[in-house]
Image 1: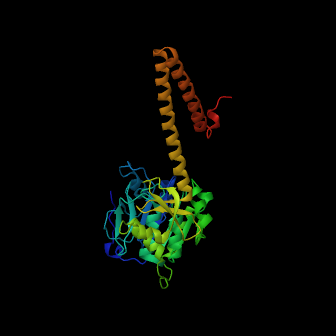
Image 2: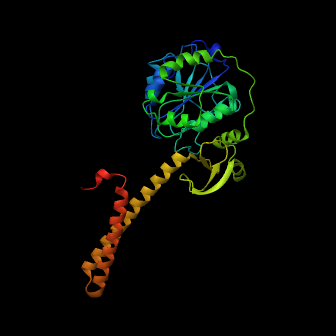
Image 3: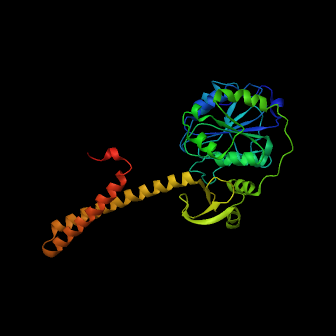
Length: 341
């Protein structure tokens, strides 16, 4: 469901673009933010909210439209941006802005375990609009959006971060504040008036887009993704990409520790560590299952055989049980409450 703009000719004209990123707790935050904006708001708003790949329906659009004055829709590839329209990234798709200002909706590689990802949207907006982009980062987990805000800032744009004390999940704003000195760190209810003021600001001459930001934007668009390009962004490290198993490169630019593979997957150090931990746990559970199956087979063999063959099978079953106990202990080590006292 899309609410039609009342004044289409006005809506076609805009000087600035607003990009918003959020994760857990984001629905309430977005409702609170967008309901503050008037029906004649003079800029398009593009929103990435982390969603499960199987999310369907219009609950997100309905929640925003039932509480605000701006029309909302899921973005469509190659769509032309219109001022006063709110565009949401469809589930399992990246939402970006092309160099000509058109909307891009792609199935590119995940960034920070997410598709849609906040960083690809922010980075693409920084390249396309430079000092005419306003990036807003709201509540959520981990640190998707931090690198994107850094790109916006380096291209001359405005950065707004929700005050962590005001966020349902403060981790994402806190992580961004550790790396970015924003133009504003405010509560949701303060953002409406700030955006109104920013819409009337005098915009100076745009600065050139740094080469590394431009290259990463092209990788996310799937226009450019090869070894020479990634080599120009950093150097290889002895870590594998959790998404495809390929080699990772450490990004050279900026204080934020980030990694990228040549197929397009990208991770902050925090997200990479989370992914590695997840892979380790998955591997341990597989190993536990295989040792239990092996022990069960050896127990059966010991019961069915006689003499030295039965004794050897029993010994090997006991040895497998030792491995089972060790693996089970490791799996339980992060959950002390699961141990018997």
